[in-house]
Length: 596
Image (cartoon, rainbow, N blue to C red; front, side, top):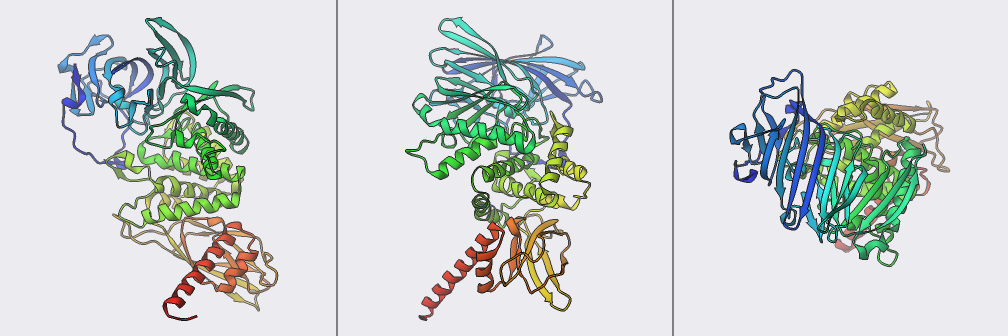
């Protein structure tokens, strides 16, 4: 036996987006057997590989593996000796060629979930065995190509465990077989018909209670829904189930996206590094994001559960059916899915209140990140530890960038882009550029400059000023954009910024013209509004149409007017915030100066 951790010394390695390379070999099908016993779990894997046609058969096969005790490894039935492979890093094995066009690799390893305090890979939480494989946790379960562009079919996942300790045995996909083994042990076999990357693998084994329900999709598929928790928490699962059904219905109506398996399981565990995880057909949640009881949970708790349940369900398409080519593209699935869960919450609660909440979170967490030493684009160019890039920038700013597509293209245009994106890329691992191309191609627009939202860090500033020509009945709005330096990016090119603008009449607050979405592409631009009957009160950046800082001189009277009359709910709130802040600071200054 040999532990990977004993065989080579690991030093931090920085990875770069520009260095992406298609793997020489790819896993096509996976069979796994887990023999779970107290203190140690044996994992048997049967991996069927295919070589890329242009690759030399002698090219070594690189596999990821971390904290594994390797019992044996074989290729096409031939057991490999110590000279047939080597650990080039503590977590990377190279198996020597030559290899056939297609070949089968089998591995027998042991892991210790009970000692896994990283909560990454397979670990034990309150007596329950569960997994967390995103971003690079599957390598702590068995030898594998632990990268998101290797999408394999998990044709058979067999779990064996003690029946008293682990009466519930779950994995991805559909349950195809179960039974007793004797000696107090039992088994379950799961099969997932959809190819997936290793980060979406999930296993849960333990003594859990549950509630059950069902949902019938628009095409008539009846889906069995089940949510699991520790027995004493089952009474707090009803709202999560209701939220799941709401999410499934909403995604069908808004985006035409239907669930694709016969079962959908959610498991709540006490010890979990993330809020929740979208593993295909088997979501694993931190209990804080799934439990809600009227006696102990606030309205905010209920909204959080609803939003997180929706987020993980929406990943079934935006993340699972179409996933990321590499981890630099994380915002492709997370920014898009945060946007989708925000849109859902707006429809389920209050659009105005939800929009204000989202912008407050962005300004409180992401704006400082974008203005500090950790500033990075929503699509980073390099990383050492991927786990450090699950940031407010990738998630929250990423969602605002997705929202700008919808602002520029309209809701129908955005839907056309989404439809094309899934039609082109279903079952594959793609990039942010592929998403942008789908949006552009579906709508016949040029979004080349829009890529700068993916390549440049920092929060742009937009300065606005306006002039009114009464004789010509014309209002001219000048917009100027800038963005300060970020680490490694001393200068920035102009962004493509959608600025929603309305013009209000001072007499009665009526809209003087139709609302417009101005496309600010240059450093400075002028936008002309014709046929304006009076000097207007401008309402700029309605709905917070871009993640920027707006600088615009407004009097107290104008802010009070917007607060009372603006037809855009976000800008009404924004005007109130500015006016209140200005008043509080003025009063504080008066006290400091000894004025009444």
